[in-house]
Amino acid sequence: QFSISQNLIERLQQQFFPNPLISMSILDCVENGKDLMHGGARYNVGPGMNGNGVADFADSLIAVKKLVYDEKRLPMHTLLEALAADFQGYEAVERMLAEDAPKWGNDDPDVDAVVMELCDFIIKIHAELKGILGNPKMPALYPVSSNVPQGLSIGALPSGRRAGKPLADGCSPSQGCDRFGPTAILRSLDKMPHACLDGGTLLNLWLTPAVVQGEEGGHRLSAFLKAFLDMDIFHIQFNVVGQDILRCAQERPEEYRSLLVRVAGYSAYFVELSREVQDDILSRTVNTL
Image (cartoon, rainbow, N blue to C red; front, side, top):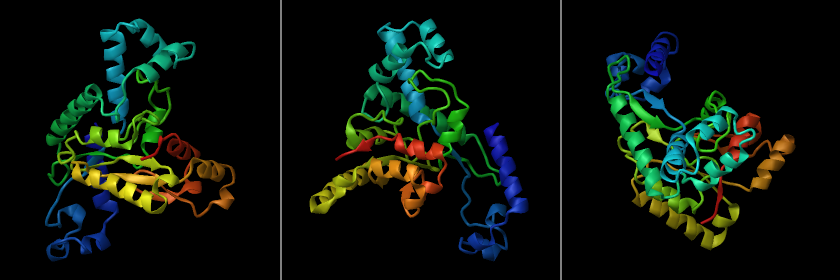
């Protein structure tokens, strides 16, 4: 259904939103006399189909496997009751799911295997889908902040996430669930088939300003980026700002109109973002190196 709706959007783009300026900069559109949306480009690919909640999926499945089946600490009927109640009255179950089950982004082989299986499934499904120009559709894992409104329609999950909360963005860990630092996150993401997720993947990382200060901080960040480049990972982006600054910006936005943050594939003035997106950014883990 999502593929069909996307084809409809492509058709509407063709009819009502031509791209003459972009098409002028793309090979062969001018020579063919065709807009890029009508197949004028030399290379036609996509469109990409964005995905969110990779970590929510993996964290939920591994929690059920570990706590319900392997360790038998949590009866399935109790889990289902807790989810239906959005953990109201089941706070002990919520803590068990949140604290005792492994989470994506911590270099845990069991969770990472779940994500690899999910990626293989996504890639195979997309191989069967075509856009209106006959191009194979590209699987993509970046949210453009859509993880926030998408989360509003999803109930409580076995990962310990409450109903209505934002999903994990792109292939980033669930908010606050990366426990062993950014290098462990890279080791998990390095296992993903990024080359086959050719619509792109996205990892958000938040660093404390102290991490990159001075010559030593520069060397530290440089070494981390070199490790990233040595791995088979598509993308990484950073926020380097104090959490207290963002909190102050929420309280006194008129004093922080020039404060830029990285959201999810784009940058924006923090005070112009919705409160829900602001809170989603603030819920990310603040890392050191």
